[in-house]
View 1 (cartoon, helix red, strand yellow):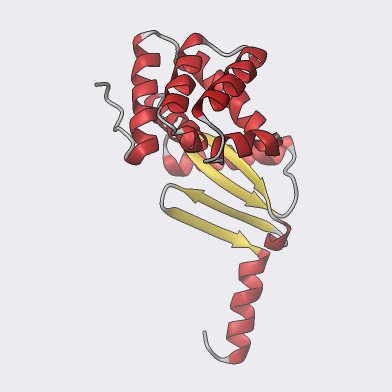
View 2 (cartoon, rainbow, N blue to C red):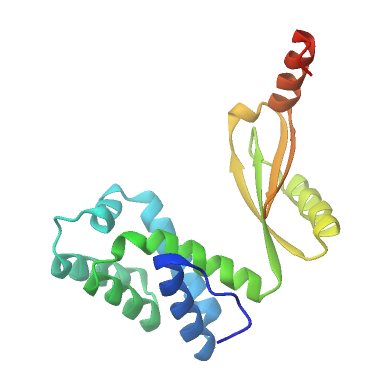
Length: 185
């Protein structure tokens, strides 16, 4: 077993197994690339999400559909075999969680910390670089920034690193002002 802490739960067991196999085969980044492409396909296709989740689709139909998709996407044999096992075991519904767990393990293996950054509008390249630099100073490690846009933030940023949340959003400032005006805060 590598130095990476194994993820827990059903998806964690599969993600850990995939990570260990990829590590042993020196294919960590190949599998990451496969999973990124597969994750994008899941996000973009309602039909694919239905294949993953539907209990009425037989394992043979799921296996054939996934094999055709994976061939089209050009993923590695290791990824194909992993998805094949998920189809055989009727565990295809956990594939999105397995992808997330694998990517988290890979980041930890590389000494990266992932920060979820939510802003009201899409950030410019310079802004992303500034946020990444500031987070690297605070965290003391390489930071991978996962950007999200939520217009409800109104302005500013909400940054989540691990269990810590830094909320510098206009929405929160307005809520605090409202509470202060009511005499609550």
